[in-house]
Amino acid sequence: MRLTWVQPEDSLLHEFEQAAHEGKEVEDLRRRWLDAGGAPAIGRNGATPEPPAPELVALARRLLAELDARPVAAAYAAAEPRDLAAILATLATPPAALPVPGAAELARRTAGAWTGRLVGCLVGKVVEKVPRAGIEALLRSSGQWPLRGYITAAGVPAEVSERYPWNRASRVHSMAENIDGMPEDDDINYSLLALALVERRGRALTTEDVADSWLRNLPAALVFTAERAAYRNLLDALPVEQVPVTANPFREWIGAAIRTDVYGWVCPGRPAEAAELAWRDGRLSHTGSGLYSAMANAAMAAAAVAGAGPDAVLEAGRSVVPPRSTLAAAIDTAVDLGHRGLTDEQGLGALYERFGHLHWVHAVNNAALVCYAVARHGTDFDRAVALTAVSGWDTDSTGATVGGLVGAVVGPEGIADRWTDPIGGRVASSLPGFADARVPDLVRRTVELAGQPS
Image (cartoon, rainbow, N blue to C red):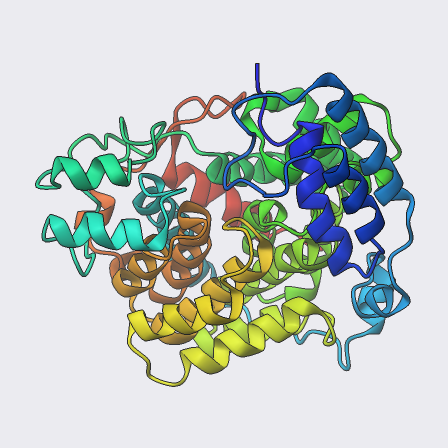
């Protein structure tokens, strides 16, 4: 069995990249790996098809431990702090609170956020893992370019779909011809989990509460990349502070960013509070850009449901990110591009030129895509979610985040029936208590939490 995202020989190659980013010395260990016959290249997916020799697996474990033990560079530690107080100390001014609308308007925007998150996630599911060129080929070959609805396999020539296969797990329930409600997805499961966690623990929730919620509710096979590594570390009884930084090369990937929208929705107009809840959640598995993107998404969600426009939403997200961090620079680049009036092809091209070297589920490139989409199409739901779906990066996760943000800005009436009718307000999940979830009920529960005192 080749379980993805935890094989030492695969994790090691990703860790070389992550450790180098943190300013650690890696070349001596990389040379030991190559001299022993280790693979030189990182694959696109979570595990190489065949295991190496046992002695190489053992070496990979030792090298991972050695890399973990090496300190990050002082410059990295100063620019990318992990502690909340240290993060806040880097901010020139505290994140500003925004006016909160009345109950009816808040409910309307929250409905737009939930609906938009579902739609944005669903439209990107069948092309998750397909590269950008492949998505364009699939859509152009079947008359679906530019994208304006759920993707269909109808009309795609066999030679194109064979070259660029649809996402195997999603094609059975996430194509225009077979959608029947929102199918189960990890992005949406994390939203449901966060909702239940805030209901149970309130705004006093801790990182340990998040860990307990995972272990009680999430099978290990339903978590990926950094979350899977963290899950393993929790079962190994590591202290919370060590969980994200032990044999976890994915700590600056997108995982934490997909978990935190609800923290913003229950803190309307309070981006600082939303970001703190996201920090408590995100720090279980992520550091650096992985952690900051979770905080930024929560802060943006808090602004969006409070009635902020696209620029103010983006400002709320940027306001909680350490200004010298890699993510801050990426957000600034993306927002600037979004304000230039580029075509979507030009915009994606510029994002790829700057961030295309990163893994397709890294936090930085995907956060840049989210911010570009909001800056460019923050009041046009159709174009915003279509952009994320054809990006070739984490299409369902960025679609969910952008859909939630723009959905809150435009409200449910700004999301066309062709998106919402196939979902029918129904959400599938294997999480306890959410077997037959309905969007109106999720909205009601979220708004009730938003009305509770901080």
